[in-house]
Amino acid sequence: MTGEIDWGKLSFTYIKTDYNVRCYYRDGKWGELEISSSESINLHMAATCLHYGQEAFEGLKAFKGKDGKVRIFRMADNAKRMQDTADGILMQRVPDEIFLNACIKAVQLNSRFVPPYESGAALYIRPLLIGSGPKVGVSPADEYLFMVFVTPVGPYFKEGFKCTNLMITRQHDRAAPNGTGPYKVGGNYAASLGSGKIAKEKGYSAVLYLDSREKKYIDECGPANFFGIKNNTYITPESKSILPSITNKSLLQLAQDMGMKTERRQVPLEELETFEEVGACGTAAVISPIGRIDDLDTGKQYLISKNGEPGPTCVKLYNKLRAIQYGDEPDAHGWTTIVSE
Ligand SMILES: *Cc1c(COP(=O)(O)O)cnc(C)c1O
Image (cartoon, rainbow, N blue to C red):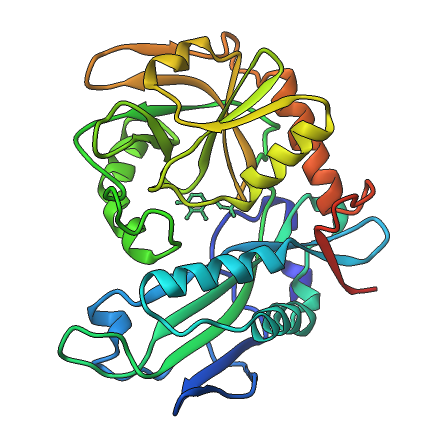
């Protein structure tokens, strides 16, 4: 059946695989991991995830190397981030052991869906934590469901590593100051669907959000962090309302390894015109280089790349991180976990 999948042409869509893994929190404790071949879950109609947004997710990838080994990238970091999210919206934390075992099992049980090395594709891993216990009054659930499913996803850049454009608008916010911005919850995505649709309709790849209190500083893109490069320095915003991207953290480390300076600080909007290179980063694309940013409210355009080609630092960082993920280069920081030979 997987013989029918054209790995190189896959996009970011759901494809059914063989198994998913589930674990229930009931009566004050987590149960055993369960393996399921069903794509459905049985859920109480008053579950808190349906009414009060008790929902957290993660996204990470497994890669098949030239050596045939399958590696999962930085999953311990995703486990930690899901725990932080759980704390943030009063859900039960998923212990490391359960999170890591569930990811490994989900990949191993679906090994025939891990795309071959040559395709440039990967197996996307989606952990999900939801309040499953019933409540009508607003309060956290007593029961939780943690599950992990996987789906193969194609190479992000099918026509090569190319720039896309972003738009800025002050008419929509993604996350409130002191709100749920730093947590990976569905609610932040619900808040960004409207502006994301406008961006797509106008031909932009995403919205670049400003801080929602003052609209003075750069926050992040809808589903990806922001970074800029200038004077041999990797600069990424410090903000209480952005999601701490694991890709961003990795690029920051790699930039240091390459002898660059790094800064995590507030980035005023005006600084945009001083960057030599700009990128959006996240698990989906690693780096999505940015060519131009249009401020729709003021009409100002920030032209970053004159020819639509990514700059040399973006190319270097992108190639380096991908090489570690696929096992082409040594994993000096211990980021990958080999889950099959
Ligand atoms: C998941 C996510 C990112 C990217 O995080 P990675 O760990 O690099 O995949 C960035 N911003 C938001 C809002 C996210 O939800």
